[in-house]
Length: 202
Image 1: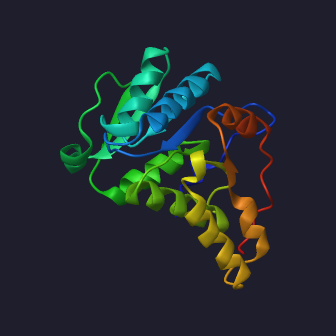
Image 2: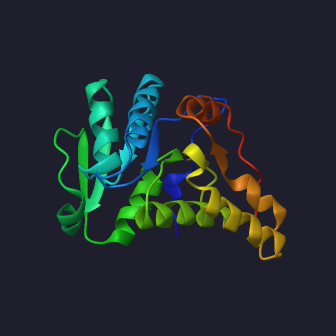
C-alpha cells in the first residue's frame, strides 16, 4: 500500500516538487527519442522540479539524468544493486537510493514523485506506467500521468487501454487517469494545469 506521506502535491497551486520519469535503458534507440529525452529533462529542470528516475546510466535513462544535471537540475536515482549490470552506473546524481528489490524501487519511485512522465521504453517502462495507472485507479495516488506518445510509439498500448473500456472491463472514466501528449514541450504545461479527477475505483 502507498505510504501516507506520499499524497500528491501538484496542480494549479504550483506545488509540484519532483517528477518521476519512466524511460528506456537501451542505447540503441533512434536519435529522435534521445533528443526528446534531452528536451523533457531540460523543461522539467526549467520548471524548477527535481527528476526522480530508475538510476541507470544507459539509454534514455542516462540521457535524462545527464541532460538534467548539465542544466543545473536535481536528479534522484532509485535502483536495486543488481540492476547496474543491465542499466549501467550514472555518476554525479544529487541522490542515489539503493533498494533490495524491484518492488521497493517502484514504491519509492511513486512515493518520491508528485507527477509522472512516460517516455518510450520497453518492458520496464511498460511495467511502470501500467502500475502507475493501476495504483491511481485504486486510489493509492491521484497524480498526473503524462505519456509522451512520440510518433505513435504508444499507439498499441493506448489502443489496448481503449479495448478494456470498449469490452467493459473498466469504466470509461479510466481514460481520464492518464494523458497522451505528442510533443515534449506540451508536458510541463499539462502538469501545471492538471486537475485530479475524483478518487474512484473503476
